[in-house]
Amino acid sequence: MIEVTVSRLGLDSSTNSYVVVLQERDGTRLLPIWIGQPEAESIVMHMHNVKRSRPLTHDLVRSLIVGMGAQLRRVQITRVEKSTYYAELHVQRGTELVQIDARPSDSIAVALRLSAPIYAAESLLVEPGDDAEDSEEDSSSEEPDLGLSDTESRDDAELSAEQLKAYLENLRPEDFGKFNP
Image (tube, rainbow, N blue to C red):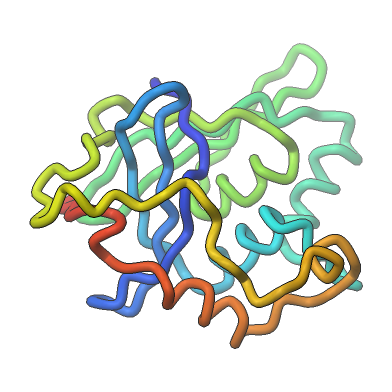
């Protein structure tokens, strides 16, 4: 297993699907995973410190883990079968370690909230530009504008669906390369 971090979040305009791109820590290999809109919104809201008046599902999971006196030790993205990714939450309470089957998108959202490391099977990682038509167009590590001011990001502003869509639509599929699981 290789430790990865959330590198980018975007919209694949060819499939109109959201993509979270994980990058190996201290490396260049990537793992793009296509995810649903609620998970994309949850991840981007956390990345930009946008707070909601009521907890989202991933906030609830965080509260459950902490409230039970447990710790999320790690998330592992283990495999892909028929274009479906599989992940596990490794939750420890006392001396007991429990591995919980979960979707990678949910696992990533929970890991971010608990500052837990994310790992991916080495076989899932690809070099950037593999199968890409234009390898010179490498996306920057800068986060695109969400349409929120710095003050709004830190306050209790809510990220609207329109703001999320605008943010994700600015990213191009070429930014992620081609990936066929």
